[in-house]
Amino acid sequence: MVVTGIVAAQPAAAADPAGYQNVRINEVTSSNSDTVELYNAGPAAVSISGWKMSDDGFVPQSFSPSSTTIPAGGFVTFNSPKGLGDSDKLVIYTADGTVVDRVDWATGAAKPAMARCGGDGTGAWVTTTAATTFGAPNAPGCPSSVPAASRVRINEVTSNGSDTVELYNGGTSAVSIGSWKYVDGDTTHAPVSIASSSPSATTIPAGGYVTFDSALGLGDNDSVFLLDGSGTTVDSVSWALDGAKPSAERCANGTGWFQTSVTATLGGANSCTGGGGGGQTGHLLGGGGALTSGCTPEAPSGTGATPTGTLAWPGGPDVTIADNVCAFTTSTGPEGRDLSGLAFDPANPSVLWAAKNKNWLYKLVKSNGKWIPDPSWSATGKQIRFAGGTGLPDSEGLTVGGNGHVYVTSERDNGNNTAPKDTVMEFDPAATGSTLTPIHQWDMTSQFPQLNTGSKDDANLGFEGVGYVPDSWLTANGWVDPLTGAAYNPANYPLHGAGLFFAGLEWDGTLHVYGLNSDGTFTTFGTVATGKASVMDVTFDAGTQRIIATCDNTCGETHTLMKVDAAGAIVPDVTYTNPAVMPVDNLEGFALAPTSTCVNGFREAVWSDDGIYGFGAGTSSYGHALYSGTFPC
Image 1 (tube, rainbow, N blue to C red):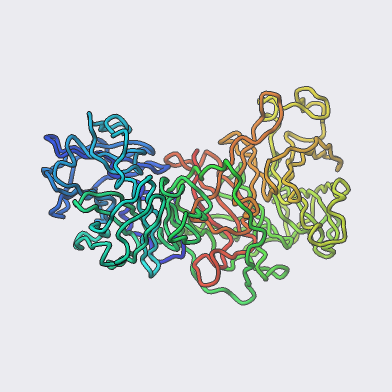
Image 2: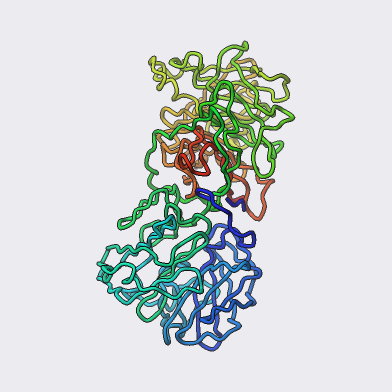
């Protein structure tokens, strides 16, 4: 998994495996076997090799788990090498000594067992009333009515200086917390009473909140454990590097897993503004470096709400800043308009093609974990022109066709930016020289009179992305040709090559389907609705067998996967957000690496920021255009 932090400090110790904070103690018994169950709520397997445990003596000791790897959504059990008794504790550490999770219980509370009830990994700690469920989801044995005190949850935490903790009462009656305590992940610290930190925090009303500032200080790779008056753990949260900056909050409010939020909402309902759900607290590492002269990031514009029904990012929660600061300044675009369209080269997955708004094309390769211009192609990128070698294409989207050529869309000529010029240009990447002119160019401007109003803003809402979709996928899935009303037959269009091109219109979020003919003509196959207000990039992903329409902050940073339905129409299937740690910016480019690159069930996902704004001035992401994460194979 690629690991990386929100406003970078120093990365976690190398021995801490990616996703360790998603491993939680899920069930424990102090009867006879002294059995412990761990649960992995993360999207990827986590190695627990070398991990240790301790009881209330806080002396880490090795244990022998049923497996040294916990699969995503899976369980591992072990018998404690030290006896677990009444009024005891259990602490789990990584091999490097970082506290992963902890549970404290009072006399008799772990007999027959203590288990999380109401959700594995997230539920409230209660004493079970029937048989244990080690190695399987919790439910049998959970009381039908969880005690009122167990409905109090840690709901939000900040480690950015104020070190504030928010508690939320999800029950229907007030809960007295006058005798409750808290402790952080430092096992040398004794629990501190909430009342000493916040004298007025004696009761939490039903549906209400209480906040207090931690007297222990909260840092990176830290935790908060909430204890009731008997010393029994009520709730806990652990986070890795910068996971609680600006805050870590439950999404959904009071019940979900923790995710890093862009905006703290202490004392009120969580906003879940991190851009995703699912509660995996990820990290955005890397970045840094001073802005170079002439590199002026642009703040994002057009931010809208995430559509209802959007699902959490299905890949890993961690994201890496994947370029050098101000890496793509050029003579025609130094002011902060950076990369827009992205596409992996299907014939060479180590190559990532990128289009810059101000008529530049880049061939990127990996170097020391970052995407940089391929010096053997051009260390500074190559300028592109319209047919005839004139004009300044407002290059936005790109894709790689079946012939290996790069196809780039333009919304307008930047030399005349009040008039639309919605075109698709075909470039041969093997062509020599520092400036490229298209082999073919197809102009669809006349199809979009709504963009030709004399306004540069309207002219800038044209072809924002494009994706090449193979004929083989369209025919195998039974796509109905809108022109004939029958199953699509590529042989009806002998000059179009081996696939069609889906151009995304920023104006209304529709995809426009074209056959691009070798004689310079084109066939229009109509439009496809993405269900989103706009579209910034389009890609066909062979791994998911879906067309992916990406929308930036206009639609809450979302990716809509499109399929062919039973009637032969291309329709939205599912929509995902970005990982929660991503900035909410004009992230206009998105690309998934081919499945041939998969490692441990994941492959690379890359995003590009048109404005290189990151989280704003002073943050480690400021001045960077590329972000790298993981997506399931």
